[in-house]
Every structure is written in C-alpha cells, then in structure tokens.
Image (cartoon, rainbow, N blue to C red):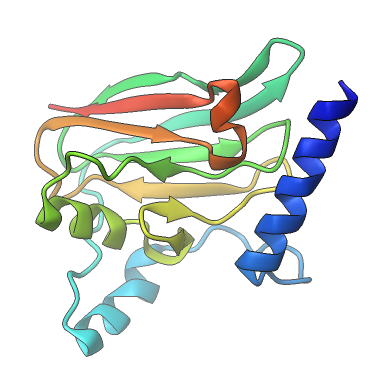
Length: 164
C-alpha cells in the first residue's frame, strides 16, 4: 500500500512538472470546436470535427475495486462523442493508443480532443471529481480505438471504443 502511494505521488510530481498546469480552478467544459478551429486553420493542421450524434459518458474511477473506466468497452456510431468524467482515484487522463492507426486517422482523432488535448492523443490530467473531456468521433472511420489512463495503465485502467 505504501509503495502504491509513493508511486502515485511520484507520477503526480512528474506529470505536474511536465504538464505545466495551472493553479486556477478548472473551467467549465468548453466547446472545443470554438477554440480549436481557428488554430487549426492558421497552421494548416487537420481541424476539429464537431460531433453530430449522441454523447456517451464514461466514468474514470479508482476505488477499493481497482482503477477502471465504466464502461470499459463502448460501441458508438461515427459522429458520436464520448465524455470521460473523473469520479475518484485521481489523477486520470484519457490517452488513445496510436499503434496501428493510419496517420490521417491519428491526426483527426488528435484534433478531435480540441481544448482537452495535453499531448498527442492524450487529454489533460483531471484531479477533481466532475472534471471531464469530451472527445468527438466525427470524421473517424469504423474500427476499434484502444485507450487508457496513463497514470493507472500498470493497474489495468484501459478500454476500447468501437466505432460502427
């Protein structure tokens, strides 16, 4: 138990040092389309694609049962979005596995993180209950998209979104 706490503390210190976070309280979830589109147009990068369908919710949980996403497996339609909500056992993030993804798909999925993007295919870190990131699956082809929580990957916190 002490080892787990020390490992978690070391991970938090490393992530804070590398993440360059903010001391301010988290802002309410914004609409990434409004924030991401002008930057993409200016750099010639792939633009954020707003969701056109249903938004599905996945909880990020850490408790006496372990670290997990609820649900860990989710099937959605192209154009839907997934809202990842921090519940307990912080810090959490959402990082999609790039291995096996075509370069254009990887770029579109990365752009679809919008303002929630911290690094390639990875969201910000969340340390307060209720913080969330909504990832659009607009312009993303059918297939399986594996994701994990970077701080808790070794503890099995992973999942998959299947786009139909």
